Length: 153
Image (cartoon, rainbow, N blue to C red; front, side, top):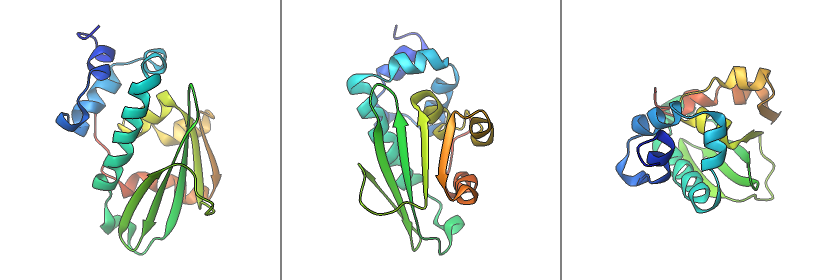
């Protein structure tokens, strides 16, 4: 299985792969392959690394004076919740849900999340086909991609 995209992704050392390489691997997978891959320990490791990279790929010059809490709910074998706080040109990410009220909440499955963060999926298309659900400030949600360096696969 290691010579397939799914096998390479499953054995991935996230610290050693660039966002562009990750995007290429995700591009080669079907939604079913992603769903199969995103189970157990790999899922926790993948989500943890992706959200950690969000802080590094944040573009403060695009955020300006924006202050917002974005809640991400990733559905799959279990629901994983992360929050991205943007404030004064900084981005911090934490696992779990706080009591704070998010400005926007994004809900999507594992496959849609991996496609979105790897530049392999259109957030507009996902929203229109109901694969991405948005609660709260839809206008802000539509501009989120400009706040991060998203790889091009």
